[in-house]
Image 1 (cartoon, one colour):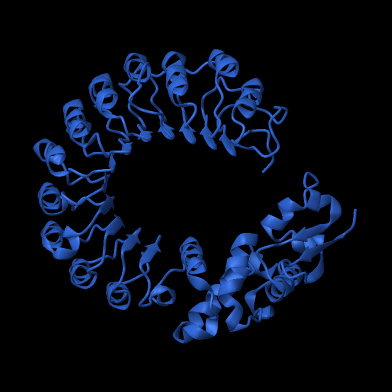
Image 2: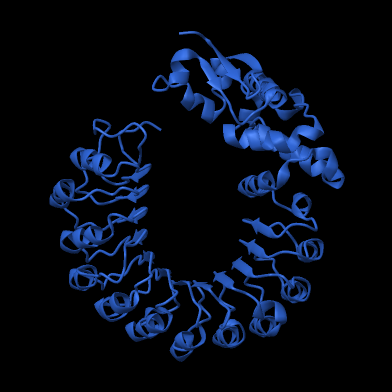
Length: 399
Length: 99
């Protein structure tokens, strides 16, 4: 009660807090903490990040000579000096992921490029201290030239010249490239270079460009025509300048090996384009992952054809906010299609989804594990669904 | 309906705690709802935990039950003792149990 009067809230520390405290205190005697194996190490790294306790001290748990893969989800408490130790203690790193790495410094990148000669995969989220000059000198280093995967998110300091340097130096080997929320990239001619430098691309993400006009149909058609042999994943979220033309002239003829198509927020794409692609699309044997979240111009007419094409192979399907889907589609699905391998389905804010639709889905998707129905207020706990299917987001479910 | 629940570790070690104490863990609480077998039988098998870890977890459940509402400021409450060698393993268990 005294604490209440002092307007202080007292909460008993959780068991995780106690554990982290003990780990932090004994970090200098890592052996005393007990041996736990590599797999658990990754898990502990994630738990620490989740508790926002990955810091200069706890990070030492994960630094050793044999480590080839590191994944720090939250680097906001790891300072510049400690970051260098990551490279000096783990010289054999092959894959490195640093999220929320706002403290990641020019000197760090330079040091990494000298030390990590085996590095093949680099993922950085939020490295906004790295400037253009340093990006360029990094890409010119031998380490960068070996990269097969480069994913970059959330920095405005990655400029047009940085991208040119990336393409010129590393383009040949890159199999996986992600450019997301990079507001320094604002030159259309530079984006238009992409198709000419990436001969072995398998995974491509371009999300939330600075200006939607930067990514147009021609660019994608060009890129697909060059990479059609290898490309299996295409993610183009919020590139809302794209139209049906890119579907019909790019995806349909060149998307033979595509398995993952993610097009969030492409409002200009409509039924005509989708129908054109997915009707008689014989060169493609079926997609495993489709995400058309907020493609609000799509309706039953095309979604049914999409599902008809890929129903045998689909593992994950997201139609969140495709609000024009009606009840009729579910009864049509019920009569004609089954989804033998579908495990994840998101139908949030598709308001026509009701108890009957849930029952149909539960029946025609025999291995479905998770079904999201946020915002579908006609879904109640009365729906007849399989016991091993988790329905998430019903208003009537108690929390 | 019994007021107690039996927790079983992967090596067969068993410990009995009150349901009130066990419900501090989100994971255990939802397992104890009547929709699941565990809620009916009052026995929960935790395949991820071994005996010594489970014993410590049970100790924390009781510690939490005793102090979570009783104490008024941090000064009154003793620290929870924890063997250093177990810290990492226990952290994984605590994350699983939402403790």
